[in-house]
Length: 380
Image 1 (tube, helix red, strand yellow):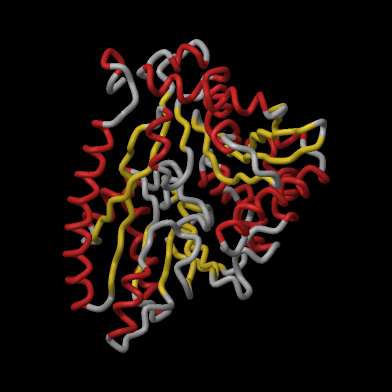
Image 2 (image 1 turned 120 degrees about the vertical axis):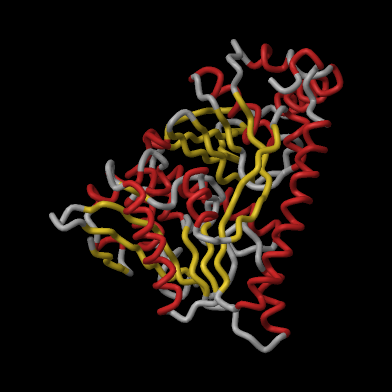
């Protein structure tokens, strides 16, 4: 077997890539291609693609992984700014670093994309190739973001430090409808949810759900205005242009769910979700009018209704957001794996990661003590 490294996703065969990528749409060739086409990776984005492909002796692909040489830490959601600052204070260079993951997408999934039968040999070959690439690029470090259980176990065996984080996910426990779910919450939280939903109705807002495949090009331009509004409100840079949304809507629309709010027929806000393999992923949202509780209605309550109606088992509402606890979401540990080239910093960061893991464990335990469910339903 041999390893190939490609800087251009469009130089790779989409069918072979997608055969390895699995069901998550943000691992698909079309997703990475749209990011590249619209400047969100490559160019001066700070995300320089290094797609690794494992090719068998027969010329067929046995595995692949999406890697990026990074010159900053934006868009990762596994925060290492303090590590970079520590390097700077000691007169050392932290960037570039090598990252394996999906840009701007804090979602757990496979990072070692393998063909059936590739097994441990294929996994080992890809991990070795990523380490060799990091060393060849003189990267300070190698970071595997939001790894699934299989990849995490292998990377831990290979001596990489495993870092814990926390997100909040909603689980479908066979609810008949939204009221059935609401009935599992204690009285205080049921009243809160009902009041928030009622306030949206009283503002004269109508809510519409649609597949991304049904969205006209002009609607993607409208949604992009909403997307921009969120970044502008927080003073952050929005990396995805309107053309990106139009492209993924055309290529992957059946795997996109849009939830839109209208006032008098005019669209004033919306939320964007990916759908794959029994899971709904909340990714982007925004509104051009200030509407109390609209965020909760579009991003959570309507999404929960969608999951119940369509038998979707899990809803990942995105990074952070402790307020999700009060709305029926539960804490879930996420993981990443890290290799640090500098021996002294590797030891220091390893101690930090161990302490952080203990803190995350305590936080998750405390969060579970504050779940909003009635005692009969606590813990599912």
